[in-house]
Length: 317
Picture (cartoon, rainbow, N blue to C red):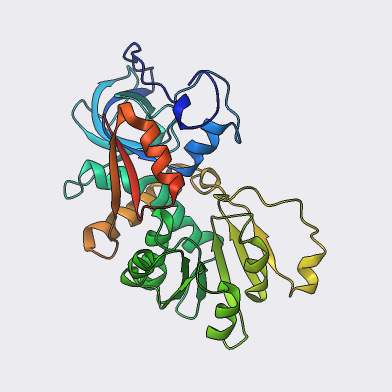
């Protein structure tokens, strides 16, 4: 990308194949994930120095290893997250971002599970650890994070109240394990949450929507509840007076990001290990909503921002 803007600023161009640095590998990508953060970078909402190649995650086969690399070989099936420039046929990946793909998991599943699966994992295990007595609101329940997070909460014994905008998406949320799914296009979702919980409120709201849901998310919490604001699909939340949290019930509001929950090799290994184990055991189903050729990355961006899709959007080189 040479400048920011709408999806059409994404250009498919020929560049030199990268060379592995001393502690890097080069991977031939087989599947690349599209995420909301990619659209924020494209629009300039989260500015990056221009020009840049978008993308954060993918899966493929190692084609080259750096001179100081140990434990990885050409041909290894790997996936990664939080590696800038992943919208490419060949990606240079630092070894500290590599994860080995189990034989039972294909490249598309691995790429689809990375950022959104790891996000769901840190939300349900670390931001607000879910237990059998947890009741949670999951916004965009049929989205990429929403479907995975709902399944994780149910596996831990928690109860999910999802929100979404269509009958098809509502059914996807129910199929993933939500106890209730509220159509916010048909009724005030916060009022319905109050009815479902008999006025108690929920323990946690997992909110990747942002501006449009923030106030009602706060109002849906029980005293000492937690609002985990992990995204801003509808735009950033305006400046907020923290004094209000006391009057609303000593609430906790947090704005977490994945990087702070993948702080070292042991934490990354724990999260990816549990994620892949859940996929292999059948506890977690990774849903791919649509695929686009890498040359049509703009189509992938339009798809994810349309909110017409339920599940993961992938680019295929």
